[in-house]
Image 1 (cartoon, one colour):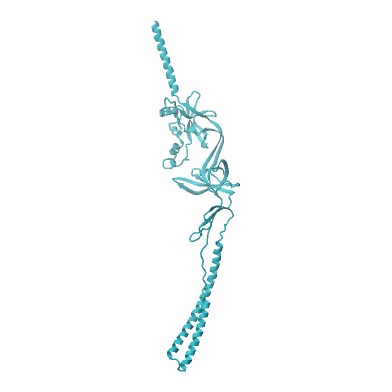
Image 2: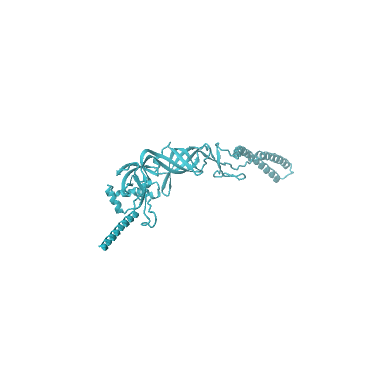
Length: 404
């Protein structure tokens, strides 16, 4: 009898030990969930862009100097010389003719004197024509003198505006000559107390940006300071780089202390929408997927009345964007592609159970997203939603099973 009792006690101990072992194993296999609370507050939907700071007006000062030479033809002196030669040959001819009559000179000598006279007479006519031509050339040279004076004035280069020299392209001693294209000597900014930011804005955001909207931006030179400006316009000329289309958003801002320089990189934030006193949850909750098999997830979906197609809405923002826009939209190259309007988040109960809740999404500030409504289930302020799960090391040799 005692032996039988001992066996019963031993068997009972084994059963109890097995139950404890099974309970302990199940407890160790259970994942550890990290949660965040659903909050009420405000959300600012913003557009983020990167741009370059520029002066409002920038002028390039160029050189317009040309070489000029002035030559004056002494036509009047040539005419007087020709007239003197004519008088001389006329006197020689008259003397030769008298001597020919007296029989002193021959006919040949008379003919030679006559030819010299005719040649001198023709020279006078040519010289008179040269005088007329020279008078025309005098007027031309006077105009050339005026051009030379203008060119001389160009050797002193004057800026068309008052401002600050932001670039100098020549040094003292360099030769500056203009030919087909005038070289740039200086670049001058008119007023650096008022400047612009040319922000490259994604095409998906330009519809939300309007003139007059306030803007904040930061620069690398002053990382702890925030600067303020106003949108003045959105340029219509598009820029396409690797299938990504952007537009220039022009932001005006004051620079009274001249702290910011042309060419600096500005990181621009443009608020486009604001909601207050709304339910919001962290974006990590939208990206969370439970450590379950697809069959287990599908069973929970059906238990809480969620269509199986809703499972796709719990994927990451990039996967949702690719699904909505299709393969031909270039969403893979566009990091700001549209996201889904609905998503499934996982509500965590006090008994460690999980409930899928399908919510309609509102605006986002890229950290929190507004809960605009509920498709299935309900959340209220203070409820906990799962943002990640960690599997125990005994079942996950690779370490923590965090799903992002």
